[in-house]
Length: 276
Ligand SMILES: O=C[C@H](O)[C@@H](O)CC(=O)C(=O)O
Ligand SMILES: [Zn+2]
Image (cartoon, rainbow, N blue to C red):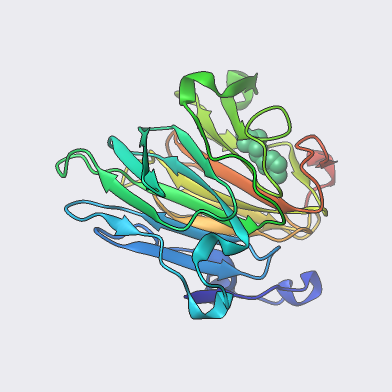
């Protein structure tokens, strides 16, 4: 499993494009008939993807977890961003279709992923954090997710935030997870930007046309850099970094966090006037 280490904001100031991409970009996680995970040292969050086409894919154990099985001391949040799919947890099968979320609590042993139709395969995005206790395995459909409409077409950031794993939704030890859909013609996410020192964050972009790219912004508010991402790529955000993007077309993205608290509103806003 690839490992991403933590970066100090003072060191980040000197990074070139290649180094920024090596340290923060989580690419190549969506591969046909593969389940790919990347271990990050940001709150020990594992970021991954499963794209079953013909095969059923299993959540395998990794030697560096020093665990008997993947979820022995972990929880996982799963969101499907493509064709109809199924996730089976210790013999119980959940239908997880596009934009549905399945949370699996600590202690589940066998987790498998499959697509209903190979012609329209599922694309599951995965986030897993260390867990101290077992919360129930819970499915939440897109229709039942808590929705917040925000932004404005005048600032090209009109979007709907869907919360799945959060204080008033699916219960978890550390994970907070949801997805944001940009309205047609809007291209900006998370602007005005924010930081949250108490939680790392990961963004996974999807439903971005293949010929388009996201300019993802990171860094301290007064020391920003951009990283270009394409569809089905993710990026980690250290606790000291903003995380925001503007793309050359409308898109959606999954966001997920883990850390000191589960409080979605615990953010420190960065004023556009103060950004550099
Ligand atoms: O800490 C929360 C996250 O950055 C996202 O939920 C923000 C977001 O989806 C948006 O503004 O569109
Ligand atoms: Zn955030």
